[in-house]
Image (cartoon, rainbow, N blue to C red; front, top):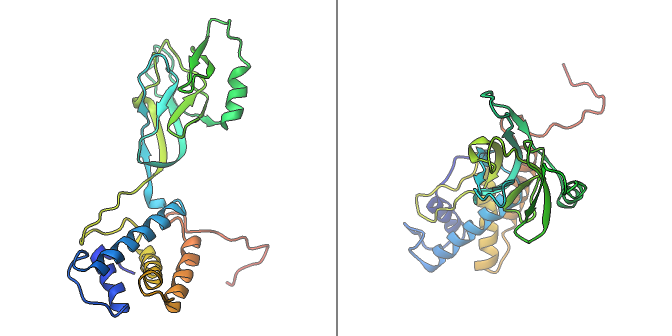
Length: 252
């Protein structure tokens, strides 16, 4: 299915509801209500899965606080961080050394850093935003990270000889981003073309139920079929979900 503007989606739904024709989503109270239903259905679709087209290479934001030298901040638009690398080159080296920084669950991370000896010269006590003490190594690049507030990235170490805080320019990450909804006639919802049928039928089914107090069984069936199909076609570049063949040979 080809992509549609918000106005085209609203017009399609109003047509099936035998409602007045409109030239703008703001022409009638009903068209405004339908546009809001489309918006709600869109956000529900976006929140229910990780959409490949919303994955981006990003850089973390620097905190630039010498009292929290092992901290970075996630950009506001990030929905889910999928991997994180940091340039771990040593002092005097010009070679970029991007290494995977491995994730630890917050409780495992706390146990890991708490086992360090706070009297050693290379162990620095850092206060988290909550006031909790973290024992951070200050003479080596990060190895592990976690997050206690879903906003800040907390690393187990940093190399003070190279930088006095972790730097944005040395981060490399990939994340799913939150799309921005544009509530205008000509706006096209940020979805792959094959997902528009699902959005249209879900919004249509919801509009019939909310505005007409009746179920549209045909739209509900179409919406269910589209959900099933979309769940099997996730990655355009990877060919979708691959099912086990359990030893069966395909036809030649």
